Length: 382
Ligand SMILES: Nc1ncnc2c1ncn2[C@@H]1O[C@H](COP(=O)(O)OP(=O)(O)O)[C@@H](O)[C@H]1O
Ligand SMILES: [Mg+2]
Image (cartoon, rainbow, N blue to C red; front, side, top):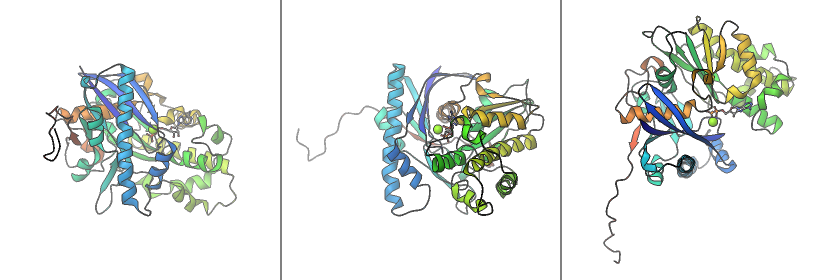
């Protein structure tokens, strides 16, 4: 039995999710969790750094430190809640805040910030971070990484399962009941990101609670078809995406052709876009799916869940809770697991998912400091 902490802050920029997980053999148990809200100042700084702008590098360096401290604060709050000493934790797996994800560039890279040096130093716990770029160095997309965890914890030889994570971006993992079949996994496109951005712009709300606003609108089929025409949706995997692709500027390009649409109908259309892109991906890459297990914040959007179930009438659509893992914490638990894999010198990626040339030990390890005799600088007085 060993304890790990996973830290996740996704593209929604809503909160830092921290999960304290106990692993034994093929099993994981979520012991404690907390979501540390991201303050408006840091959130705005991160949002502004998602796109090129003035003085980017200096702003990035500053935010790297601020987020590093915030991640460490989240760990310390979690330990307090759990009444555990830092020495009980083997390692922290920190995803970091993604600012750029360029998997298909001539110079492919992905940037996650929140300095792990600070996390290791402030908490006294070995920290693993920068999980994506090793996969990219081996020709992979660097994403999605959670499918390896889904395979380890959620594969079931009785059912053909698909795990759907609906964060800012949505991704699926196909887990066939025949255990020798390679796992398929990829980002399907937008999850909540466009829904959130549109609700923020027109309703001054962080998100459309339970999808109520969208539910009162009408999906506009011609706009939906235009949006679905984006080549990302038909492109075969491996593939991954981010907010640098699916954002309001991307939407505006299509909206020019539909100037008279009501904002509420656009919200309904965006919700349908998320639903249809997920459902089509499932039916195309796993037509015999029996169970669809949902995790990520999208699970709380009642209307989105209803629409997804309507598009997948032959499948049981339910939350990952039904398979024993709380849907809000799957990603944070996955990064705790990824840290464990790295410390045990085991692979964290699935080459069949990311397209990397081979399985890899992911991430950089930032060791907890060994208590040393304090050393005086030669100029320092005794
Ligand atoms: N009650 C709710 N109703 C509708 N949407 C919700 C609700 N709760 C959470 N969400 C959605 O989930 C998002 C957060 O999901 P999360 O999985 O944390 O994403 P990320 O991994 O990108 O941070 C919110 O921004 C919001 O869109
Ligand atoms: Mg989140």
